[in-house]
Amino acid sequence: MAGAAIVTAGAFTTFGGLLLVPLHEERGWSRASIGVAFAISMVLYGVTAPFAAALMDRLGVRRVVVGALVLAGAGAAGTALAGSPAQVAAAWGLGVGLGTGAASTALAASVAERAGAGRRGLVAGLLTAAGVVGQFVFLPVLSRVVEGYGWQAAAWGLAGAAGLVAACALALLRGARAAVQAQSSQAPGTGGASHVVTRALRILAAATRRPAFWLLAGVFAVCGASTNGLLWNHFTPAAHDHGMPATSASTLLALVGIFNVAGTIAAGRLTDRVDPRRVLAACFGLRALTLVALPLLWSPSVGVPLVAFAVLFGLLDVATVPPTLALCRVHFGPDAVVVFGWVNAAHQLGAGAMAHLGGLTRDTLGTYDPVWVGAGALCAGAAVLVGVVRSARQERPAPYAPNPRDTV
Image 1 (cartoon, rainbow, N blue to C red):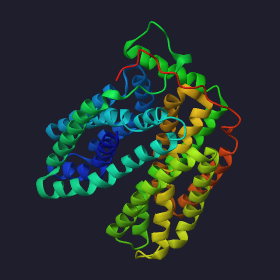
Image 2: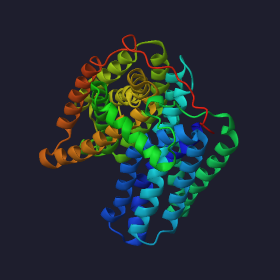
Image 3: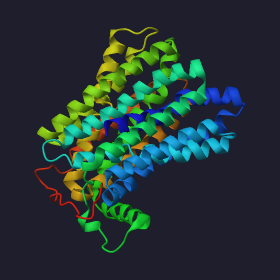
Image 4: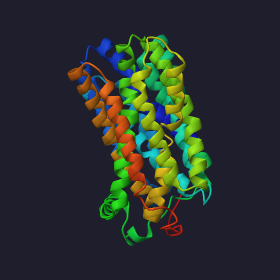
């Protein structure tokens, strides 16, 4: 499971970081035309998760994970063979987008649901941390491959890694059971892809009638805006505005990634022991303080204040995943995994919106400072909104009852 999370996370972050520039320079294609593939993959990464979660309930975790890895590997291989931007968009955008989306948050949520009471938060934290490791293991390794052997070798390397992990998953996940079965949403006598799509959409329609869904989707959209959308897109350009070399800014981002692992695992463990609302509110409250303080910490070199920012932000970056999944479980019971997939789609929408607004603010005002402060205010608001969500003591989910038709 961890291997699948590592490979899919590494594949998802590779294109924009390593392949875009070599493709532009070697093939002469415009950055905009190449970027279409990355845009498609980002959208599919966000919207695939709820359907993948429903498919895991129907076919079992093993089959979906193996299929997702094969699809991502085929997309990477197709990119290496592509002869036009349209072919890159079809290979990377569709193949890698669908594959990584099906084996990312859906996988972590589905496996965590099967872990049993008292361990779900920890398992969710571990698998989320594995995804973070994938980003920071693959990028430096593949960057050396690109420098020494070219971008096509890196794409083939990703395809090979995906195939290897798929083979391991096929052999080792024989005893895995499917994720939580949504009894209330199950339509007897139906099957196939149409059933999976119908179920995911039916769960979404039911969830949107409950305030808890909109609260969780809203706070997770703020999470995406303040992390993927803002920090990971605009930290390096903002650092450059203050005279810091890109290599130094990248070092600070790497530090954020390292502490992501510890923070996510710790948040998962805390979620198993205390009210998840407290964990989630603390994450957003502390994140708000770090973002508001950042404009005061900038300097041309890496000093203690910026290192402290990177460490603290890293501890909080993806620590929101285990408590959010736990709150989905509290309010949506056996439908929690699919609902979390839709909540994660809101995360991606928030990230995309902030990625655009951050650049627009910099172009208009000549500085990123209002963006950091504004994102901090959004996080403070999210911390308050978390308190509106009912706690686990006020509502208990229905017990998990596996469907005898589930397979592995």
